Length: 232
Image 1: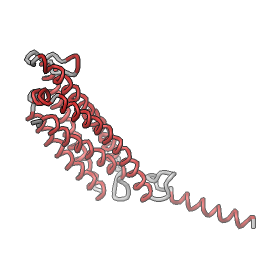
Image 2: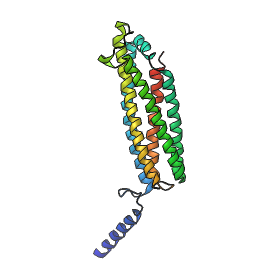
Image 3: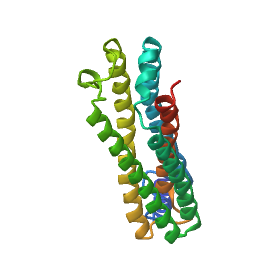
Image 4: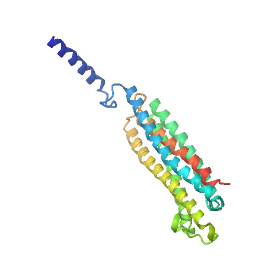
């Protein structure tokens, strides 16, 4: 009876070891499918917290706009709408390149995967460059948040509302910019791994997860652009 118990457990451990001969399968998962499903669930939970974070800012912006509607309407005219529209197009293109990157990983086409990752990174850097020029203009004009607001042409009674508008502008676009920068770092890490041939039809989970993150970052900007730049 004792030897039977030993045999059963020995066979179980052997099967477990065989299942983990694949270096892309983490030791705490039994199968690739379980690993992918669990990883996606974790990413969706993380993205849910990001949505709540930006959701709080959206609600705060809406409440403040209802308190200072004229000031917000006047302040938004100082934003450079063409640059905002350009960044919207750039991020939409980056979403497409990210989708193509994931598809390339699934098909095992490492060359195209690397190309699409680099194109996505390039779009992100263009976005950040445009934001740099936008921010530079705001600093030169004194269109700054809170007590630092010093735009000289503002009607005195509108200064409070205008400063609140630019507080939200810098908070939301700045936070979004940090997410873009973080995405660039992760995309570059994925690119380095792709260069080593780590991804293919049997394993592309990191590429898929980064794609989900990148689409959320793009989606948030789709809401930010009309909210900030197209106020009527």
